Image 1 (cartoon, rainbow, N blue to C red):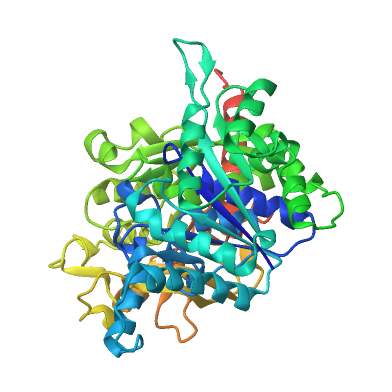
Image 2 (cartoon, rainbow, N blue to C red):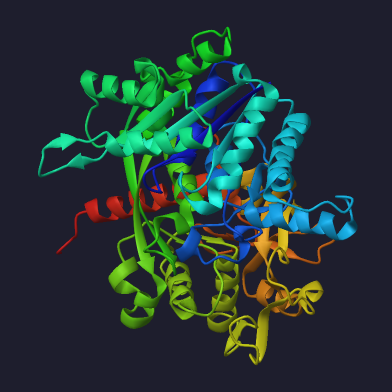
Amino acid sequence: MKYIFVTGGVVSSLGKGLCAASLGTLLEHRGLKVILQKFDPYLNVDPGTMSPFQHGEVYVLDDGAETDLDLGHYERFTSGVLSRFNNLTSGQVYESVIRKERRGDYLGKTVQVIPHVTDEIKNRIHRVAKETQADVIITEIGGTTGDIEGLPFLEAMRQFAHDVGPENVIFIHVTLVPFIQAAGELKTKPTQQSVAKLREIGIQPQIVICRTEHPLEPELREKISLFCNISTRAVIEARDVEHTIYEVPLYLHEEKLDEIVCELFDFKSAEPNFDRWRSFVDRVINPTHKVRIAVVGKYIELQDAYKSIYEALTHAGAGSDCGIDCLRVDSEDIERAGPDLYLSDVDGILIPGGFGDRGIEGKITAARFAREHDIPYLGLCLGMQIATIEFARNVCGLEDANSTEFYPETPHPVICLLEEQQDVTEKGASMRLGTCVTDVKASTRAFELYKSTTVSERHRHRYEFNHHYRQKMEDAGFVVSGTSPDDSLVEIIELRDHPFYLASQFHPEFLSKPNRPHPFFAGFINAALRKKSSDSTEKAVPVSHA
């Protein structure tokens, strides 16, 4: 078994996760079984309690683990299905070490960073190796080299390489080569200093991936090679991609990253075939059609807050040879200015998940606008709850209907807390999390899209549809098209008399892949295409002035 560790230097947000995921794509195309994992130095046990403004989206795995958004890249870019053991934080490490100390597992020894903390980190790699039996395990180390909180992880990696043998380990360092405008040239000194910091710890990277806005000329590559003590071939240029992140594996392949890795590990593999991946990228960059989709949320200004949703839209668009013009609408703006200004010229409206009462009325207004104007609507998690509240108020006449999350004293709690959540006081990892089975009813839009009566989807929520209102709403045209197997929980809803109005309590965006878009997103984009085509036809019909 071979191990690759991806570290980062100079600054954060260099794209270590994308580099790791892209390398996973390249090695899979060479026929290798690859699994990825992420080590995060922060002290939170997981990102589940973090604000999206702090950390971006929380990505949920099959087993209910709330993880870093990079694990979303790992699952989208490779075929691997990850578990809670593929994401490790300092919080988890210290929690485990203290628990063992309290039990007496250390037999009265003084508990220290070395060896007890570093052993805990190494054990996680061994566990993933044993359970997956992968050919290659790629581990991304979060943070930036030199950060004090990251030192135990780097020391553990140094020890691990010693334990398994240096011939079985590759260190890849992602760094910044900045362009100084006043001088008109790229500077390699930050890269030199970052690699020197790693070498102080005892880690010598074999490959350096250089994030840069300009091409790396041969003399610059040679300079980095000389000062970082690596082969010139192993200085990899990684310029910002022009159109889509799915170009990154193709660019790194052109830089021969996968070839160098295979040489270092002495892998014998056939030349990879990227025809399907290139075809997907081409449809993303040069689509035949285009639709305008409004994503109405409360964390709109942060790109990473709805990362999986934007990617799922891209996948569905490419599947229909359709570009996505994504209009990001702050729901509070709708509250202030009304929906016409933002939603009158869109082909579809999507309302994502979220927590808290800020901007909720703006989302309800957007859902009503979609219903009344026959605009395709897709609601995800909170988006389903929003659709329920809107329908209860404006179709069923249940005045002040609401969720008890936003208005505990509402006279019509059409969305309420799960019974098992009533006495929960701790916030972390206490929601309904992970994969659950949904029974899909025949002769519904959901069944038409899934082509199956049983599906499994990932959840992350506390509140549910209130069954006391189900019959009244169904009589008014509200369709419950998916439920839990015992029919106690509503999972999917749609509207009877609407071109496409669909919402789910689960998060379908987490299961979407580049060449395998999720059926809900595919159906949503196709409905948006039909609406746009219909609107164009109506505008093209000449007006009679007889």
